[in-house]
Length: 455
Image 1: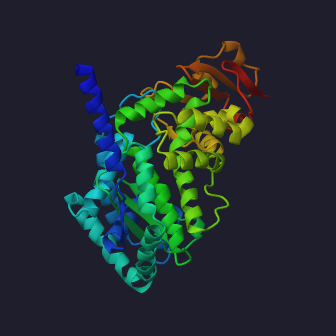
Image 2 (image 1 turned 90 degrees about the horizontal axis):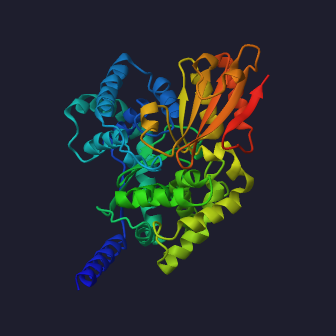
Image 3 (image 1 turned 60 degrees about the horizontal axis):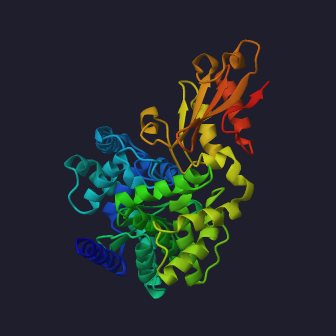
């Protein structure tokens, strides 16, 4: 009797969860100068994802950057920097989580951003934000507002016209995400100039920021909203379900399981983006400028459509095997490359090897990465790449790095259940950079041993 009652209770809980998730979202347009000033300051200080070079060029060109601007920016950045430093370490997990909300430092930034939007900012932010608002006001009044105040309500109308609130509610149910609140705010940021294809969009909780130019169409902002809000829904699933999902990817019979997990969040978001574009009747030739996401998204889209129409499988119960099977077919031999298998990675350069680390990141384009050894150790199946000169090498037979040997080499050994540690070593920092170039060309890798040498 007790077991039967427990099953009944859990069944009712699941029905309640799915009923909440199935309620439509409500989209709201916002073009406030306060949020525009906040975004400019956060962008310039590096505390929100944005097209930073465009905004820097705008402020140093048209706005004629002044000492008072730098003072205000320094004061703004100091509040965020303090919050990030005070944030605790990330909790341990089987894999490096593929959503930003897991990381306390990102949560600290988000809390500060939302405190401004919701009208109760940290008091230390008031003065610098007032400064940026005063500086931006003439330009917004003469130029920027004309674009975003027409554009943003029209984008909301597109979302409503094509029933995207209901679609996104179905996506929430698929992800078992009991999201609250259901009001989603589209904050239009007047982008000064530049290629609209390079404009950035990002989401923080139920607040979606999108850079808008005069060349953008409302449908562009609508599909960007669908993409970014998928991240919000993905993140909203209970923490224990995220851990269950990680373990499912670790259990699959392929060393690429962790990489497929790292790319899942954005693959789903891009698939929802493609679904939105189908509904809007607009073509989407290259949905994402990335070596893997476009192919994975197109492979994921039929699976997602089936799950949304039939109500099963849910993301955390039965989706993983089909996703990996379809993704493997779409990516082909790329699945075997170290670059793909480092889709989440710790990149750990010694002092002086920062150029090599930057080159490695640019070549493999990891979706998630860290450059901190202590954070790497929090995620037991996260692969790592050490970039070191020979005197600092460990874990390699000494004969490989003796005087008279190769200028550089690559080595690998297993780590955890599904991870690897790669060592790219050289006689000098320039030699490490050559090792990075050679590493990026590899089509496969043994589980252990020498990868290559650079004479």
